[in-house]
Every structure is written in C-alpha cells, then in structure tokens.
Length: 461
Ligand code: FAD
Image (cartoon, rainbow, N blue to C red; front, side):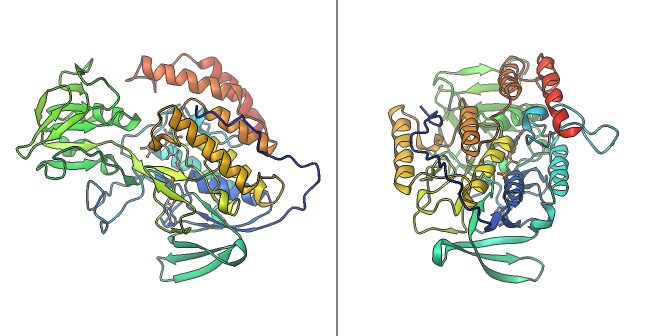
C-alpha cells in the first residue's frame, strides 16, 4: 500500500522551456544528505551554504567515543552527541550498493588507512564522504561549527536562517530563497513505554550511547529491539555479559528461545512490566532479574530549529504533510527535506531527492499545485490507514524504495536505479537471513559485484 510512487496522475509535464532560476539555498547538515544536496544544487546553478554544527563533515559516520550525559537521552539539558556509531560497526550494506551513483564507493587499494572490505568499518565510510566532499568542492560551501538555531518564514516566500557559530562568530541572521533540511534522524532516542519502566532501579541506556560492550561485562542485560543495530549489539554484548535477553515486538507473545550458537542469549516477546526489585516480566511469562536495560528502539525525527506555524509537524514519527516524503505542500519547493525515508539504501536515495529539489528550485522540473500535492498526501495516509500501518511507519519504504527512487528519477529525467543495485540489495537481504553472523564476509553474489564494477568504469576510469 505504500507503493504509490508510480502514480503520476498529479504531476504536470511542461512542453514549454521554463526560464531557469538560480537560488540562494541554505542546506542544514553536512552528513551524506547535506553533501549530496549541496553538490546537486550547485550543479543546477544555485548558490549554496551548508551549515554544520560539528567540526567536520560526515554526520553520523563521525564516530566518537563520547556519550551523552544522560545515557537514556531524555533529559532536555543533557550534553548531546550527534553520532550513534559504535566502535565495531561495519556497514550492513555492501559498498557497491551504498555509494552515490557517479562516485562509486570502491576500495582504494594501496592506502593502509583504508578498509578494503566489501562491508567496511565506519571509518572507511567517513573517508569516502570526505573524499566526495573534497572532490566536488562541497567542502568549500560548508560552514563548520555553525549550528542553525531557527528557520522561520520571511517575506516573499523566503526563509530567515538564524545560525550560531562556535568560534566566537556569534549569532547571524540571513535570508535565503530556500532551505533544504538534512539534519539526520538517528540522534534523538525513542523509548518504549511499559508499566514500571520509569521507576525501575537498574541502569538504562539507549543504543545512541552504546560504543562497546565493556560496561555490560558480567551483567544480566535486557536488550529491547530487533533492528540491524540490535542484532549486532546483542551478539557483541553476549561475548562479555552473563546473560542477554532480547525483547522483541515482532515475535509472538509466547516466544522464549535460546539463540542458536549462544549459551547465554535468549529471544523473548516484548516486556509486560518492570518492578522495583529489578525484575522484568515478559509477555511470554518469563521473569528476569536484570542489571541493565539497553533500548535499541530507534529514534525520533526532530527539527528543533524549524518554525513553520504548524505547516510541518511530527506526530508519532510521521513528518507531515510531506509530498513524496520531501516537500511540505504549503511551502514547496522552497522548504524541503532530504533523508526522511528509512529501510532504504540511503545515499542513492538522497541523491535522487537532491536532484529533484535542485531541478524544482530552478524551475526545470514542474510540481503539481499545492492542492493536488495535499490530495496525494491524504490519499497516501488513507492507504496506510486502510492497511493498518501505524503512523510511525509512514516513512518506512522497505519493499518499495526502488519504485520510489525510479519515480523521482522520472521526474528528474535522469536514469533509474541500476538493475544490479536492485538485485544486489535483494541478494544481500536474503544472505543476511541465511547467515546472520557471517553475511559480511561470505556471499554468493559475485556475479553482481562484477556487473557493478563494470558499471563503475564509467565513473572511475
Ligand atoms: P547525518 O549523517 O546524521 O547528518 C546530519 C548532519 O546534520 C550532522 O552532521 C549534524 O551535525 C548536522 N546537524 C544537525 N542539526 C544541525 C543544525 N541545527 N545545524 C547545523 N547542523 C546540524 N547507512 C548505510 O548506507 N549503510 C549502513 O551500513 C548504515 N549503518 C548505519 C548504522 C547506524 C548505527 C546508524 C545510526 C545509521 C546507519 N546508516 C547506514 C544510515 C545513515 O544514517 C545514513 O547512511 C546517512 O549517513 C544519514 O545521513 P544524513 O545526512 O541524513 O544524516
């Protein structure tokens, strides 16, 4: 039901050649999304400033051993850290699939700093993003250590951007024709609610503040969640902890299974309640006396700087209304978002979204009317509702991400996703299920790797 992206009933095509406009655009964030947005905007002829509050580009791929002062991430005045990377993290997508289309993420042989593996560690991804930023001149558009604190509507459909720079530069107010929001959505922890959790006496962490397993040595740990990080982290912790009990919302209530290959790890259904004596009761009826609960329960979309008078809101992790997950109809295309969808291959999807935004801002690509966009959003929400999909899954494009990418490609008049990329994504997903422990080092899709590298010759020779 989420795959409505091929319906182009409301998209106008124009036969008249429009006059191309060059806009002054503020991009918020210099992670993968902001970097590719800046490049595409610049290529389209726009003037771009990228605001980045950290001291380097790369966003979530800038690993730091630092954690926040509140390990669960709810205290409003806590010291904050942007990245959720843990020390041992290797990508869960192969590098061929992950990279931008015309800047393939290929191994750089002969450089000892680099990690040539097909599923490399986080540092290699950061190096790739930094190479990209340098090679396309994006680095020169970035104002580091400059945080956007307010984005507010200004006269004539423009935007006031208030920023604060760390280096003593103070606060600056500027007017831009357009703002592209690329601030990431893996920083603000989401926590589950169950009876007793707020008064439970044990230690609690959110995976945002997980770096390595040492704090869990010899402990009885309950880990909530079943995402990619939850899977990695539970296995890593099992190597040092006394017991690991995984609570998952996606298994039947009676589930209680010892995990194959481990004598100290169990899979349970979700938690029913927690008690002051440290005990935690699962829906399967089992009771565990635990030292620590580790919440691998995901993140919230969060735009603390955005003042849109209700034009864009976040409701149960639905950012809306957004036409095709990118544009609030009331202020399209001058306000846009890159990187909202999840369960996707992020970098190429960001690239398609960025091309679309850049072309819309120059008038090269046409948009439907505000009313038509709003109708499209409403129809999409109705379909989600009819299929019983919770609001918080609005931006989950799992299963139809490539249709979405291809729909945007059609709007832009650029080539759709490569066939090998689609097939490789599907092969890797199957391999992950078949070999959850070893899929990063054992695979059977070498024929697709060869096709990918053949394709890359267009860009790397
Ligand atoms: P981010 O990388 O988070 O960048 C946002 C940037 O905005 C940051 O630099 C931040 O400092 C800046 N910012 C925020 N607010 C402001 C402000 N007010 N003013 C100025 N700057 C601001 N993807 C993959 O392709 N493969 C993987 O294997 C993979 N593994 C992952 C593992 C983990 C643990 C996580 C958390 C994510 C993983 N991802 C993976 C997804 C990853 O998030 C995306 O690949 C991508 O890096 C997201 O880029 P982004 O630009 O949207 O956000």
